[in-house]
Image (cartoon, rainbow, N blue to C red; front, top):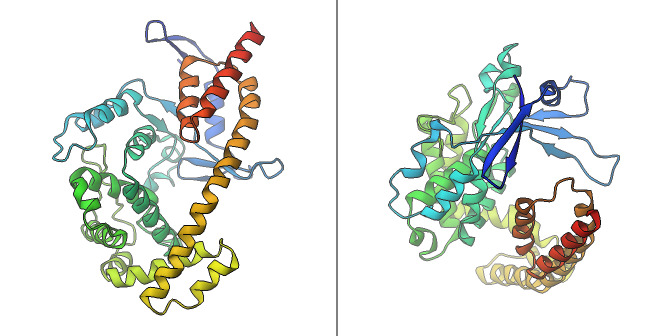
Length: 352
């Protein structure tokens, strides 16, 4: 039997009615190969090329109404460095998690399990935890993701043989390190390359042992032993700070400079000395600082334009949805909160 759940804010409970449209969810999740949506992981790539949008990843999920028993130890496990703190842990648990329709890689060829196997998703929890990171931790996470993507560590190998490392492994590495290392480890003699190199060495150890512990679930290994590990492990173990510094200059900073005016990007034509490199990087930073205010103004302008249209199309403007909106808008500019509140009140007055 299928039910439609609705949350009641008055008594903090869920009301339910019988619901006979369950097949619709199955139809959404499993489309024929000829459909314009392509699956990668739990996401479906939907083609909006005929509209003003580009392609969009859509993940259909079912919300868990309680924190899963498989992760029962996570909220209370011992943490030496008070990350995440008790308030963040409470917020994570209260947000709960979801289940998404995706089979384990080794089960995808099975006719039944490939279509009907689901797994827990802690995306809500991960977002809360990542928002609690220090700026240096957020920067390191971004740098590592760029590195593994540029070095093609997340793509398929020869003859479509799967390669072990994914963005989720990088996220898991970051979460564990944030919990097991003190804040001083990240901020002492701040050196982004040193931190990235240390984390990549840890990742190489995980690959050598074929063991990547899930951050939330007990006894769950995120590394598939059937994947190709040796080549990546060897590549990661050979990385030192000197090599990684050169890599980021050539593959990251130099590409950033291409977005700058010619007088800035030309400085990277010759970075043969430390002084010349510092001058070129400083020029990029100065240019970005000078353009950041303009970018923020453009973002505020676009947001102001979108708020009325979005609110007018909402079928259910609740206190909870307004709080979520205001939390996101505050990250852009707190003045948008006043604008949003005014538009929301006018919308409610109009429909009443």
